[in-house]
Image (tube, helix red, strand yellow):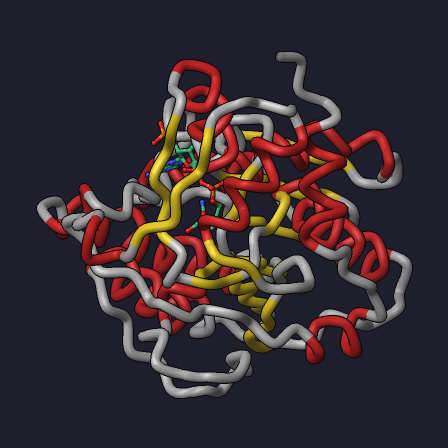
Length: 289
Ligand SMILES: NC(=O)c1ccc[n+]([C@@H]2O[C@H](COP(=O)([O-])OP(=O)(O)OC[C@H]3O[C@@H](n4cnc5c(N)ncnc54)[C@H](OP(=O)(O)O)[C@@H]3O)[C@@H](O)[C@H]2O)c1
């Protein structure tokens, strides 16, 4: 009833789940990553699941290299689509609940107000396309929750926050785009939100309601504002210069506006979501520079 498996456990989200697991002593959590369990390898998955049963499958595994995906579509599809097909199939066979994570990059960014869960999708890049397909695959299983999140960062792994800290220490000036806006999300907050859903369900609160949900820290900023906040926090002397996306071309196109409306998540699971700046400060306070 309380057994949970985390796939892709060494990534940002998986590591944050591991970090806060002591807040959820009633859950029995097993962690695996690609070396032990490759989600695109169905026969290995079946073997693993034949020996152990899990009431909750949390898929934190993904191919997340957004730019590289433009030239590695097959690899991205193998993990993000076929891997999720496998997990949904296992979840059905073993009557598990599946929690799968998706992204704001399923949207094209042409909106001018926050995206709700059933806003039309139109991914601009290969990564976003594979993640959109992953949602469809995950929802083939009945007991599935898909959580779309955005601009994830953590003290673990590689992410924007760590890149800015590293570069701001070494350089006098950094150019950062200010015409892409969204909501930075601390992976610790998402980790806690996921384990809280499971905890409540284990305690018969019956809140596990199938569907897509948006979860991002509250508030909106540009990558420029985000960088500036990090640099100001540490009092780095490095200057952050705003530039346009056109001045910083990348292989993958990104939505210029990808704010997620999170009301459905808050109401369904009765959870509050912290403001992005507060969460960022909480994260930065744990980093020794
Ligand atoms: N990062 C973001 O800004 C962002 C934004 C929105 C949504 N999301 C979504 O949030 C979720 C968590 O993202 P994250 O930032 O925590 O990702 P991450 O740090 O890249 O972690 C993903 C983990 O999955 C592992 N993995 C890759 N292929 C695998 C496979 N075939 N089988 C098992 N494990 C595999 C990775 O191992 P390797 O490192 O060895 O490849 C890594 O440990 C993902 O679904 C992502 O799409 C992320």
